[in-house]
Image (tube, rainbow, N blue to C red; front, side):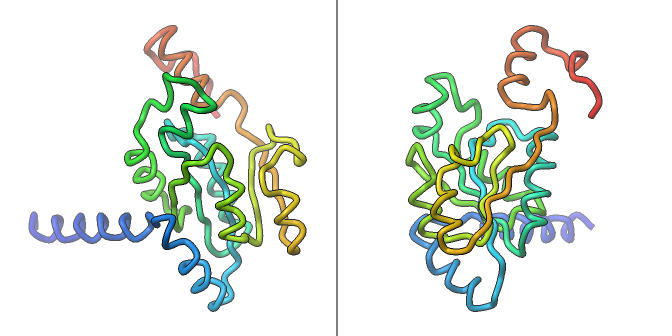
Length: 181
């Protein structure tokens, strides 16, 4: 029995690795997806501590198409807009955790402060961001709509954010303060 379990674990690890795409591979992946008429959805973010808000957001994003590609900010990229104390989890950990989610088909690191170049490489059918972003603030929104794509804004889960989690941990290292969702 332990042998079977180790085989299953090994195949799971291989599946995770297949979901993590190098930036240099993204255009070939997108070409293959388009050749099979897949509807491509793209979103991006830091995804430092995966929480309920992330899970619901990513699951809903996936519902807008056939394939969800998630752009993950590199450590340097995160520090450029969140400051020197972030991210908490390194990029390798963050992208592997995201790749373990069933709703995430592929994940790719990007080092720019904005995902615009990556969006232009992928040319998604649907671009997704949280409702905390105004449409005119969403990188790539104008471009996606120019080629006939859609921009979707997803309502966030109230009280759920990595920043709030970090603040809660600093204030009191228990989850008492987090209400049920």
